[in-house]
Each structure stands twice: as structure tokens, then as C-alpha cells.
Amino acid sequence: MYDLHTHFIPENVLSWLKDNKEAVHAQWVHKEENKDPLLVVNEKWGFELKKSFIDSKLYMAQQAEANVSHSVVSPIPQLFMYDFPIEITSEISEVYNQSLAEWAASSPTTLSALGTVPLNDPDKAAQMLQQVMNLGLKGVIIGPGLADHMLSDEFFTPFFEEANRLKAVLFIHPLLCEDPRLKRRMLPNLIGVPWETTICAADILLSGLIDKYPDVKILFAHGGGFLPYQIGRIDKGFDQWNLVSSNLKAHPSEYLKRFWYDNVLWNEDSIDFLIKCVGEDRVVPGSDFPFDLSVWPPKLSSYEGVESLLFK
Image (cartoon, rainbow, N blue to C red; front, top):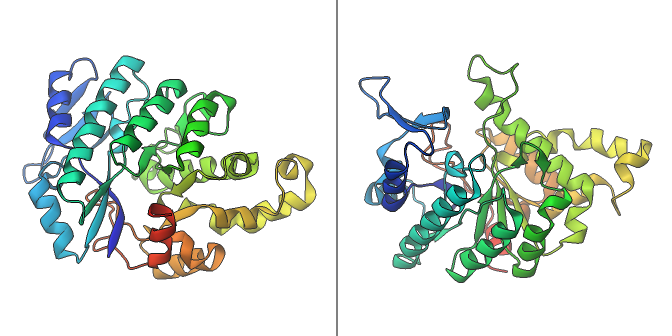
């Protein structure tokens, strides 16, 4: 079984963080006696730095125990570093990409990887995407945009042009939502994470970007957030308002079938609904391992989706 949604921090990346901890405000915070420390970067988005994140042998053993025969490893979103100067973002991206490429090359039957790019500089991101593909990675994991730019903005044109040329996989993974209303009861994660994906996915869909760049392979994390569940409302908007329909050649529900989605939904009925909306060949297995809310072991899904996303 494939697991297309996992995360890891290679030793070289961890060393880079320690060497640059003042520049990126990295802290290892011990809060609970029986747990690993929290890694906090730039005073936000702290998470427990479990040994599975940094011990490659343990990571591989736990994947094998879950009957995963091939894992696709991605950088962690907390280390995208988009809110830092481009020099920092580029440097950690290069270290991350090289480290994952070497690890994947050492075990090609059981590992593939996605890289990371400095999305805060689309020209540099395009250049690094080419390097990523030359290293043998399948594409990159990116956030849902920047504070002042949605992914459909012309600002990102150089990056999407290169992704389209290379037929790269773009795994869009949210960061925690910073809406001030969501400061309690873990809502930045529980609701904010899928909400960020929903905003990004709906904007990409309605912008017509997928017609402009038809060879980009976009994979949405966590089942596409809330978008599939509300696609009927968006179809209705298409029928009612020119602002919704002007960039599209068909109803939004048809465009929904042109993306890929992982099945990290924790609920069989939700997975079944997603498959009904987009087709079995557009849903791929994932876990979000080893974060706290991972689906573990991952749920089986059609191999058709894996094949069309990674091997065509």
C-alpha cells in the first residue's frame, strides 16, 4: 500500500535549524515530562517533535508495521519558512531537498519524496522546482499561498509555468489558520487547517488556473478541506453569478474531478462521499504521519489515483 502524505525532518535539516536557531527563532520547548519537546519556529505552529519525525529507521519500521510498502515523504509545513527573507527560505529548501533526494534514492522501492521551494520568490521557486525534479523528486509540497497573495495571483505565474512544463506534482498543504476567532479549543488545527485548504482550493478552481496550466498535478491535503461538501453551493453560484462563471468552461463540480485528494479524513462516510464527488481515481491514500492527527494506519484507496498522480 502507498502512503502519499507523510512528513519527515532529515538530520541535515535538524542541524541547519540548530545552527540557525536565532535567525529563525527556533525553540525546543519541554512542556510535558513524558513527551518529546515541542519544536516552535518563529513563535508559532509548535508541534511535538516525535522521534518518528527525525529517526529514519524508526520511521521506516513504523511504516512497515502499518503495511505501507511505499511512502511519499514531504517536508513539514512548519519549515516552509515563507515569512523569512528569501536567503533563509532558499537555503533550508536546498538542504531539505538534497537530504530527501538522497534518502529516497537509497531506497527507491519503498520511498519517494516531494521537495520544498521558496514560494515567497516565484522566480526562485521555479528555478528550484527544476532542481527538485532533476534530483528525482516527484514535485513539491507548498502552502496555500502567502499572507498577501493567493496561488491564483499573477505573482505566482513563473512558478506555475514551470510546474506545468515539468508536469510536476504540487501537494498543497495548509498551515494553521491565524483567524483571531480561532484561538481556543485547538480550533486553529481542527477547523482552521481544512478551512485554509478550502479557501485555496475554491480560489484555484474558480480562477480557471487549471485550464491555463493543465499539466500541473494538484493534490489537496485532508480531502480538499470543506470544498467537496459545499460544491453544490458553488455550482449554484456558477448558475447565478458571472463573477463565479466567467473564468470557467464547465460547472465547478466538473473541475473538482481534475484535482487529486488524499483520504486523510478519519471517517469512512466522508471518504465515500469524496470518491462519489470526484471519482475513485482522484483519491489517494495518505496518513499525515507522524503528526498527532494522523490516520494511522492509513486507509486503503484505489491504486488508479496513485498511478495517475505519480507515474503518468
